Length: 266
Image: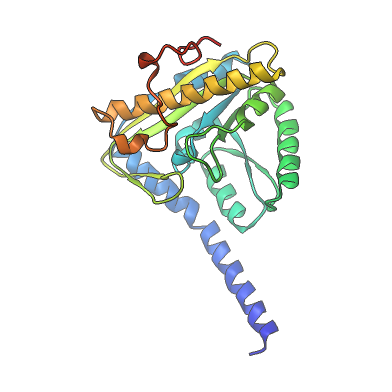
């Protein structure tokens, strides 16, 4: 067979597999997570997110670690969040899954170039400014890490739409931690699951000043680490040191430090 014909067959097969995934994976995901949640004891302390949508005209921006990205579509779908998915083949599958779970999906570019990503974020920000009370979640250490180190995107987004910030975390007693850079979590059935939301954290004055921005960035990162540690400690006593391996070196809970930023003074 000529190389050109081989290439055409390869494209047909790939397109067929993508279409198969598009119409099966979202429903398999939905069925699996429905079964997990139905058979598990779920401690859901995310009512502050619902309150924020009622109280804040500009909604909120939630900071999330990439480790729980598999749970995100199911856990937060009730808030009808707005998010971005690429226009590539994988983006088609993800978009269908997210819409099935209640999300509004803004389609971005498939290019990995920084200039393209920046343009998509600008377009997404303009999209959010036209909406009342949007809920936005950002995996702040994604998409390639390092794990448990917060990038600035969530705060920049909050500044752009003038929305307060939350930190959220989902954790399971029975789970599989995949061997990915973020130790992605797959929850198992017949489980104990805890979902926490801490905040809102209003944007401080003069956030456009570098010192203020860096201080608030550090504060939010530490609040997300605190919430993560709280989830761990609600499952296991003491907390497994292996779970803390990706935390910043020397990190301790706020109760064990005198740092005013860690104690909530921003």
